[in-house]
Length: 243
Image (tube, rainbow, N blue to C red; front, top):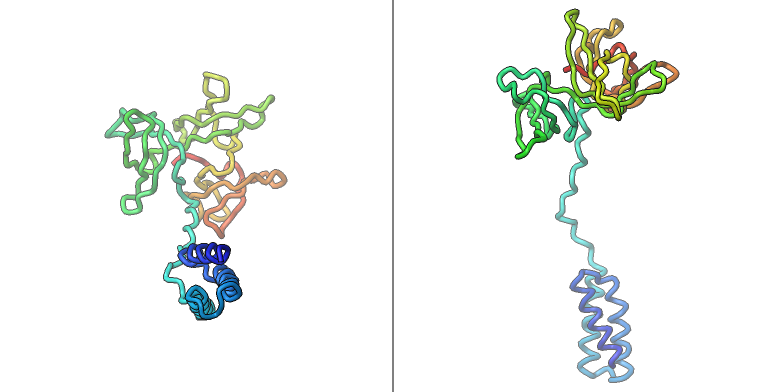
């Protein structure tokens, strides 16, 4: 009877955890022990047998449909804009010039305002709302082409020359001086947001944004994604990171 009592206690725990399928054979074993040791007319035997019949009804009854609604899959990232967490530099602000040159991270894109919400890396932390053209992505591990030995660094600034050419300052690893280069002289890493420019075959794409997925060495082109389903290959001269 001691074993049967222990089995009943375990059955009670399993039933509270809604594990009736596991509880049923244990209670059936307890009922058999009570039947053998105490006889069919003993109150323990009758109560345990009734419990077995109750569990049998529960386990054979159709299960009620779950009321928990499945969570929708996460929305795919929008590849024509900065992703949350992207590190940026604020630049060319007119009204709040004291913020120019400040580093921060993108929090989200405000669709109703057409601006990014940015958390500046200052103490105390400050949230600002900034137009896209006032942000420059701090691209890590950008490589300077045609340089021996290869040089990699972080893009930390930009400027526009008198002829309209955009140049970018590459802060190379371990160096204090910056190297100013055009975008086509850089190998930009995966995840960089770029603007399409100078396309002649598909001029409608000029001015649109995409995210670099990879570099096709054989073709000498970037593979960029404008969306989850649209990918194109572009020469380095046809991309820029200037907003």
